[in-house]
Image (tube, rainbow, N blue to C red; front, side, top):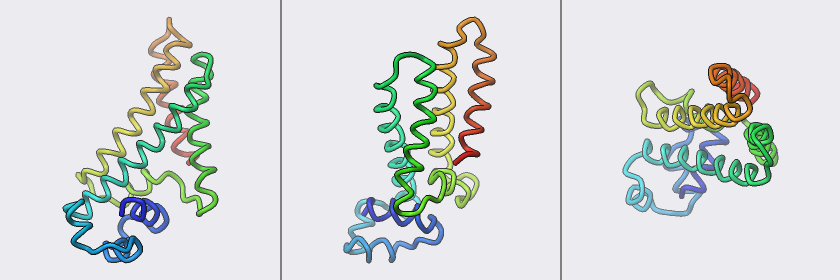
Length: 155
């Protein structure tokens, strides 16, 4: 079910994708879905958590290949590029997390997942930049904020 939800939410959006579409495509009964996810909002949150975990798995793999903080900063960018490239086969629609956040109402728990993900990415960049600029932590923080903003715009 979650695999189907991930595919449909990214392709069609969380608002446009109904529970009936997901259960029909997944070949499960609606009761099975609701036994695992008590609401569509809970399923959307699971989708966003899955996107977050997928991104971090790719990032960790990229990070293992680095040889210092400069390469670690680039690993964040490479992870975004990897995700964009992987989505080309099925139709790249930008960042699935940001797309969902744009559809969700203010106060929705899904928006919290997206916010935490974006803050964590900025913190990762800031940590690596802090290693590159140990005597200028303020500058590293501002640069991390700017680079994160550029990454979001690029997606």
